[in-house]
Image (cartoon, rainbow, N blue to C red; front, top):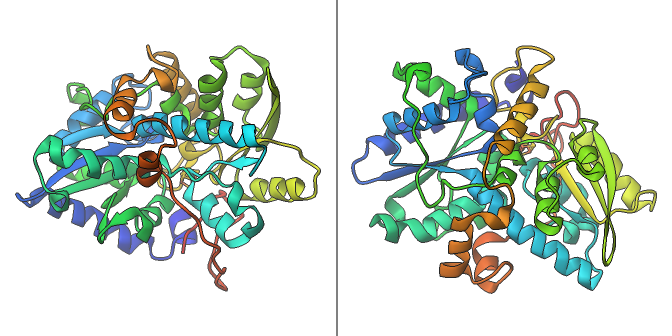
Length: 392
Ligand code: SF4
């Protein structure tokens, strides 16, 4: 289906990644930890008929432990951290009036699009690594001591809604002396198959909690899985907005492109949210031509954001996308903590290791740089169909 159309080598890599993870788990010298992306939890239940199960995430945690993962963590923790960094980065740029609009950088298909076609605006791309890569970098920095293992023996696996995340993890800047920050990326579909092949009855597993310190998250980290979620999380952190405000309702709408303005004491904050790379390209052209005046732009390559990613189970109906989006909002609303700076484990990481957002330590571990890349004939990013960004 879709995979064959957009990712010619996918079928082979897919199998290899699953086998490599199994081999690492079976190797007694290795400690294998896993991070689970926000969008995974609202789609993984579908092939098991468990999409309405409120305990799905807890059962998934239990299944991951039975599969042999030593620790189960949440990419939403790193999403909270991303907001701390990206929010600070945005406010600093705004104070200086430079490199605006700021474009988000958590979608690797969009990042590659900018490297290939947005050379003039590359400085506008946030230097923040994606939550997947912030997680990997921090895990490889902090967990060896905490777990008493060598960095080379710590294996970080990511469960992602996304095939582009596999290439992101292989970028050479996201490694230390050849040892990658994220060793393997499995898609939601691959985890579904691993669970099915293991014979575990997901629906009957007793729900379990995630491990600390990286299992703690706020609702803001969870809504990263929706288009508009990053923007909403930033607005929570900089202005304390929790929903009900006109600007948030606009950000939550499902249209391919929406814009909203928030009045702040130092002037208006103009926001644009787009999903699908064709919409992103049109917006970029409007910004270039001066037809759109914006300060902050969120871009996700997939329709609906990561919840609609190409690594998710095939949608069973036209309502699937909306159900996943609503489920992410329900999970967010059920959280006690909903604003990133309320995440006590994030605060602890700053106190113990990073100092404050955008410090030299934070830059070293959590930020990156970009390079202009040539687009190769016949390869590149698919701009049509499901909108999924293919990374060659
Ligand atoms: Fe991956 Fe799509 Fe999410 Fe981008 S929007 S990170 S391509 S799932």
